[in-house]
Length: 282
Image (tube, rainbow, N blue to C red; front, side):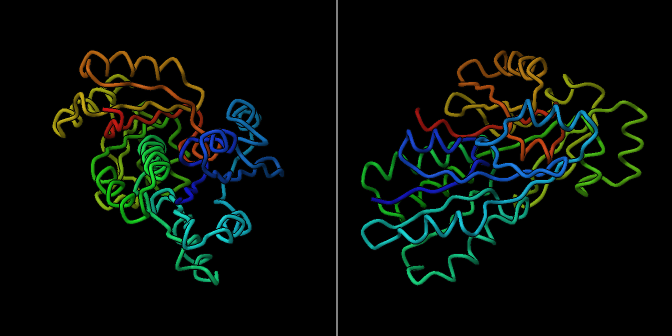
């Protein structure tokens, strides 16, 4: 059977992976001089509390040792399919490919670039696990994952322009103007999935959600899709977005989940991500 491997960028915890029959490596975050394995040693509420004390965080991909521990088990009968966060927004895919090249059994290891993060990657991993349990081959699984990969859309609504500026996703001048005018930035993935780009500067959080809804309608989002709202300790606005989406897409499943510390490092405290993806249960 194909062994599915991913990391916490998929929103699964290592414990959830063990319960469901696949492997999840933690991303790491560093803050206030300490490094933690997220979802094992630190969760988002504690992480944001440390940020609020004035500390700036950084994040890192899984260690080569984490990858090699799983890769070493790959055989012809039990190949490993490693599903990573989208290449470009993280170095995880390139790093995994590099580690794979060092392995003597590399022909039994496949690294798949999900082209996504958070909700869509969560869906891709779930589909891969279900197919592996049904006895599908790596090639059969990837064929289905490519379809899911081509049918998702992601938006990010940050609350802090400084996180976008430090990440190079807004120029210092644009960040300063946005902060002064109290605008709400709306970001989306580029067409090649490798970066985030500005989709708009909105007058309010609700206006940003309306712009997401407008795009989802243009893309034909409907009952065959599900919507995921993930947030960094901002349940109030996450629930506001859920109410607005539920009115526009009454037949779609809508989930609200917590973002991980590593994603909080990128989007900033209280950021909200809104994503559409194929509902694999329909």
